[in-house]
Length: 460
Image 1 (spheres, rainbow, N blue to C red):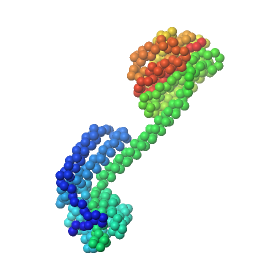
Image 2: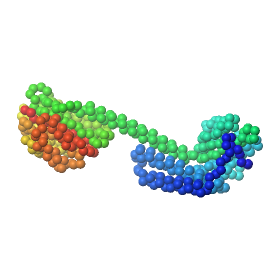
Image 3: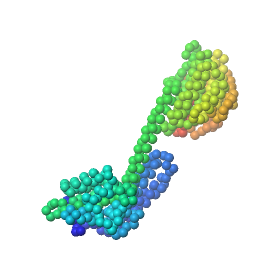
């Protein structure tokens, strides 16, 4: 078939072999770089963002592989018998003569469509027979626009190969005009883009999945924050108890969030004036993060308040709290310390469940209260919790806190750093001043988990 004249310009001369070789070398170097980054980024696939990144790497490699194949074909010319395992990314060409109704196909196009090269190429009227039913109108419209209105073809459709496999083909073509300007034939290049489109779908699906996960995480975070704010006492400045009669305790507390704001934990603090005139003081921590943990924390705190209001003593309260946590549908572990303060005798009765003991500061010196036995909440069924008592004096400062108050330190090291603040706490005026001192000392550091601190100063 003689060379054709394009509808708008003559065919360009092919580039020199040396320049194409240079492009091929650049493409292959880039392929190697992308593949190296992709291999370094391997993961177990559990992170949606990592799955999305991996899909993008795969898509980039598919595109570079196609570019490498096309540049190689441009340099070497059409291969007479290319291997079947490399054909699906190659480009085939075709020309249909409208005057003689003849068709000419390249060997690559036979391979792309899965047809025997010994058979005659399909005419334009026969071509829709290999196209998926729902895509035939698209192909017909493209061919009609090309032949009647001299519009270039640039579109995709799906074909069904003889073995039943469905492939996606991208077709670009132009009308070829004869001397009087009428359409004499149509030429086209067709490329199998099935793998490329599959990679693009993977990118799109993983991106959508990542966006859904982000939206779900943002919603859960908002719910956890709202639940935490609704449950914890909204103190602004010191809280003075009791509300009726002479003031006996000056109270203040603060919640220190983790440096990673997405991690909403189960730490709580609470102070409640009870019906018998005593005061409940408690802090605790439910392991984990998120809405479920915040909800579990709210349940535990509600149970603590209810049992304390009913007159339950701290040791028994911890036993029932352990039973409650042990009976939940989703097992969890928690720690807590619960105190009842009797103002007429200045007696503090308290119990703990795997939690740091309260710290008592008197005349600028601090010490840890002798801790009664008590395992973590939810660790074992039927646990019994001992109870201790401490007599306080006017001016004493009681500090309750959760783990993680001192970032990077735990256990005795953490306690010793807090106790070292004794002289400065002794000089502070109100409970709120004491809380602010602790926050200034430990709040600016990066912390992996949130924490709570509660201060109670005996005023009378």
